[in-house]
Image (cartoon, rainbow, N blue to C red; front, side):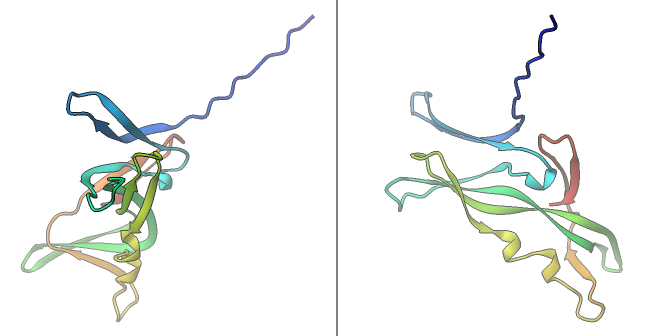
Length: 156
């Protein structure tokens, strides 16, 4: 008699960053592990920026977290010298959110999405409607991926 195969389904995710609360004696008191599942547009790594809000009795941690957005056909220009500008077209941009980690509940809440204040799509050139972002120095690109196996590279 044939035996039926069994399957244990496991949800895969990539841990990409974390918050840790450490006691003065070095004991781990609390931890939040940020996980990124699926497509690269779900990227959500917390950064090194961190501040404890001492005005709130719960002492939440405020930080920044990467977020990814796509804006088609944006030219990013770099001023190489007084008379030389170079540019490349990009569709993917890596920005930041301001988040709050509530150490009592373990939840991370988005406070601000910086794309709401400075998105490449809001910088359309008035004459031709093309989206152009100007910068005075070299820009960074960052490759992002989650558990889905795909990756994207975008301007940070």
